[in-house]
Structure formats: C-alpha cells, structure tokens
Length: 177
Length: 352
Image 1 (cartoon, chains in turn purple, yellow):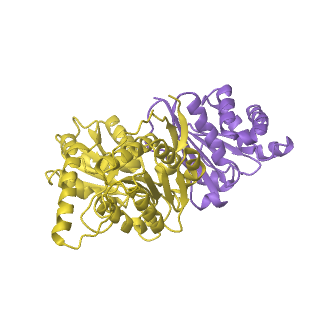
Image 2: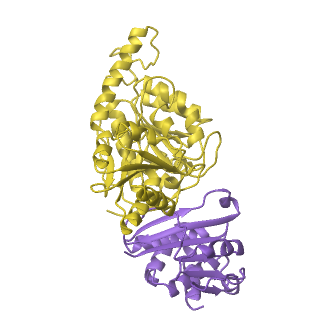
C-alpha cells in the first residue's frame, strides 16, 4: 500500500498550485489514485498559499495533507509552519535563497537548493518552483522523468506551450543541483 | 475511458452540460465560483444559455421560468446564496417543476466563512423554504460522484417533477481528482402534458402555479405530492456500507467527511478495533433500511459531521433510538482529521 502525501507551500504567485498540479498529473499519467487540494482562502489573493497532493495505489481518504511525506517550502513562514508536521523519514525541499532552515528535527532529510537564484541566473523567471520539483524528482521515486515531462506538457496551457522547454530545463537544473 | 483531472466544481458543470442542462443561472460566490465560470465558457458552445443573474433570488426564479418550459435548468451557489434562493425553491416544489440546485457549502450562519462545512444539512433535508415539501438530496463524496449524481439528479428531477439538490462542500468543490465521463444518454421524459412552451392555439393553456386559495385544493395537491414522496422513500435511497458486517462501532458520515472517517476506520481496524462506516449517498430520502442493516451488530453509533450535529437526528430516528448515538464534529470551516476521528472511535471502543 504505497501512498505519498505531499505538501507544497509558499507565497501566492510563486507557482505553488501549478507545481502541485504537475505532481497531480504525474499520478494521472501513471494511472495512480490522486487528489489535489488547494488552500483557497485569502491566500489566493497574495498571502501564503499551500497545496495538498496525495498519490496512491489505493483510493484516497482525506485529501487534506496534515502529515506530509514530502514538503516543498518556498518561503520562511511555510518552512517554519510545516517542517514540524513532516513524517519521520520524510523529506523537505526548500529554496535556500529564501529560507534559513532552522529546525531541531533530526529524523527528516533536508534538501536546500538556491532555486530562486538558479532561476534568475538561467533566465527562468518564475521557475524556482519547477527547479524544486526537479530536486524532488531526483531524491524520491515519485515518478520517472518521462512521466513528469508528460505532466508538464499537460499542465502548461496550449497558449503558453512555448514555455514547455523552459520548464524541462528547470527540472533538469533541479535534478542536477 | 479517459481519466481527466478536474476540480469538483468544474466536474459538476461539465456533467450538467452532458446531462442536457440547457439553462444555467447563477451568481458568483466562493467556494462555488469555478462552476459558474466553467458554464460561462462552455454553455453557449453546447447550445445552451448561461446567464449571470443580478442576484441569487433572480437566478432561482429564472430557473423556475426555464423549468416551466420543460428544459433542464440548474443553478448553483454556496450556503448564504442558497438561503437567498429558498423562496424560489419552495415555489419550484409547489409548482411541481424539475430543477437541479447545487450547494457547495461553506461555514455559516450569516456570511460565515469560505471554508468547507456541512452545516446546511437541516436546511437541505428539512426546510429549504416554507411549506410541506422535500427535495431529493444527493451527497457525493468524490469528484467522480459529483459527475454521477448530477446526471442522476437531472433524471430523477424530471422523473418525479421535483427539485433535486447536490449537497457538496468547499473541499469537494475545490479539490481535483481523476474523473471519467460515462456515455450519457439522458432519458427523454414526456413533458407535453404540463410544460408551458407555447400552445400554438392547438391545446389548452398549461398553467404553472403554486397558489391554491381553497384549502381543500391545496391539501389535495400536497397529498398527491406526498404519495410521490412515499414512492421515493421506498425506491431511491442509496448508501455505502464499509466494513459494517462485524463492526462494534458504526461511524456515520456523508460527503467529504466520510473520506476522513474511512481513513480513521481503516486505522482503527489496523489497531484491532472493529469499526465500520455507514455513508448515506442520499440524505433525503435518508437510507433507513440501509443504516439498520449496517447497525445490526453494532453496539454504538457515532455521527461525524462538519457541523454541530444535524444528521445525527436522522440517524436516531432511523434506528428508532435503539442504540446509543454519539457525535463528533468540527464546524466553522474546520475539517476534522482522521486522527481526531480515530481518537473518538478509540474512546468509544474503550467504553464498550
């Protein structure tokens, strides 16, 4: 019974829901059960924002992720709020440009990469979220690179299809960070 | 069949269009807005009418008007907006018109909040407006069921000539899940005997009306309607029974809360506690036979709701208070966690 619960959190506008959607489509591509649940309160209007994604071999109960196996944190408040919720043995991926990873947890693995800086350096404006997804892909067995690329092709709207190569590049940067 | 990934709200809209809904009248409100937005984008391509009314009250009365002509009509809103629609819903019921009304519930009373809630259970099942009447009330628990029950709601509304409601909540409306759209061939009900769609000087006027000034006439119209309700109570109940055969503690929940409870029941079983889940899929009619079947070996029942406890009344009535029924709930937009529900199950298990 393999179930992976993922929480993504950051500021509104950082692409939290978009990155979550890519993970959800990865589940869809691999014929898994999945759920995607956004926070939809004032967060959507620019405050903090988070998104629950569950991918499983079995039907999913509550779609609200309270104790994630995997956490992507894109700002300090999100890291501080959610790092304590991560399951023992879980993994946290965070943007070290934005976050001082202060925690006394020793039972989780922390993967900090300067994703914001990397996005700026590589002319990938707004690509920090996807770079972190690349890192998550590298460090977990959530899905194959091919699946994630297919998911990206699905999630990027047709009008913005020109941005697909940039997203692939961001995944590649994250995987090699 | 192709699996699509859709938000619950979008799936409700797509299913309605596929079920032959030709008129949608709405007014935006969180957490239901994606439904109206989807209708705005797609309805005209499907040959139907989307109209954003000036208010919820206008929208429900437009539904009354459209339904009077025999076309499939729908409106959707969230809790405060449904309260505004209540007068129109009563008129629709009193006029024996088919229509579908969707409530993607949020916390109340008043403007309340915008997070998920189930505190409109009483409103939906007991009194969505004045007078003696009922709506068919369906309680989906997944995005797939949102689709399936919209299709069924349109069918049964036509079949019985009465309003049907989908009682969902913000969690189901906002979440995305894989969903497939079955081949839908809506049954064409003959509405030629009552629809006010133009008599072309070839038949008597059809009059859509809910006013009966003579008490015996009004009483008769209500008695006729209640005969219909008796048939519905006999034939239209639906429920899911999960691990109930040997359960000591029967946990009852509907909609999104039932998903949380199912996780808790699985966790309880893993710890050796015999828990089961009873999930009504129709809230009116309440699945009386089904809950008695589910509860036959249970020592205690627990109702878990996102409210202060409303369905618990129907549970007690359905089992005729033959066993203790306890309650656990969170309200105001707070979603109970599987761990909290498990805690309740364990507390009850210890006292058996």
